[in-house]
Length: 429
Image (tube, rainbow, N blue to C red):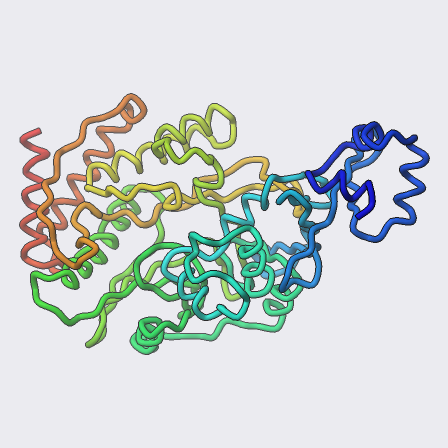
């Protein structure tokens, strides 16, 4: 390894710093670079020029990956190039932004959750570990650049994934196909998108819409874990209906059933028609401080002028509503934003708009990992400083939810009794 490459193994360096370290003149550096193998990346121009050492990876043809965005009409728009560098860095060209690791939008879109685990199983030949938690940046790149034609959002990374997108079309499905698709997923065959979430699901293009379909088997005792999960699917649909009926944007969801399964079909808001897409990023990517509640994150994003006051208020309302319907799973991957980019090749968004609500349900009552139904008491929460101004609205929405749940034919007698008790708690509180 020559002296220039050796210096760059520790990461990107400004031209001036590289010249000083090598004790050479600018002219000598330019002369050496002209005759250098093609593993040195020049980033920027003039005094802002920096250099990095291109990192190539096993299983990938090079360290350079074309980027493409798919717009809402289904048109493919060049978005630049991602180049992986030494010291686990990467650069987004032509804007020249350098990242420690991968750009957050790329990591955010990588396979995750239930379907991510199925992805890892199906594509083990790529060399990715079976456990998503063990994936490195290299493994993410393998996944997104070779089999990333249907990731969440609208960014496609790498020539192989681009080729797969250009040559592929979504297979039209109907609800009559759902039992067969659920059977396939249950036996370890990924169907559709690699969108996150821990419960069994599959993606489909049905009746001109891209949907994610959660499912639970119909078998099992009326007081068992399967029945509880069926209740929770119904309550998720109800929560989204309550929000939407009160003017709060929420994903469209409907309950469906076959002899073998109950389904919750949720329309995807990052897809438009057959081929159109919208950029989407989770709160985990936008805020990157997992300790903050949704409400605290909303305030900080508004203060940073990344989201509007209206979106900040809506996110705080959703946080309060979630607390009041016993949704104890309000993590940062259950909030999504539509990023707005100044240009297609911009490496980072200029601002964000809050996407419709989804995954709102009383997870306090979810079965335990061993399939048991632990007795859990709902304690009516009190407002925080961040939610005080939205609390009355959230409380009214939550009370409507519990009243409807206590009368809903789609839930079990046991869940109706729980819902009725929770509605009474609002009056007592």
